[in-house]
Amino acid sequence: MQKLIKTYQDLIVWQRSMDLAVECYNMTASFPKNELYGLVSQINRSCASIPANIAEGHGRGSRKEYVQFLWIAHGSLCELETHVLLSERVGLMEKGQAQRLLQSCMKMLRAPIGQLAKTPHP
View: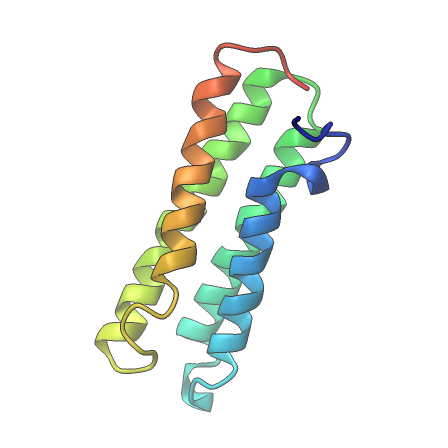
């Protein structure tokens, strides 16, 4: 039986994207101080944007706006992926450190976008 979704916090994709944000914040805490306004800032900003846009879209009154905000969250996830890959290439994080959660969130964001085209807004 599926759990009733009352708020955006009940959405598994929101929960996973929050987990991803926490993991990213923990990873960037060990980055050198000279990256504070570079990759640290970029990673933290883009990872926080993902669950924020999912929540904002869910809070809007229309399915069309919800889908729009899910696409914005998807774009932020792609941006985050790029920053993570760059961090790996320059040796600031271990290869594959965040890939599992990134891939999980990517799949989870695509699913509701497709589903919302077929069903009414919750």
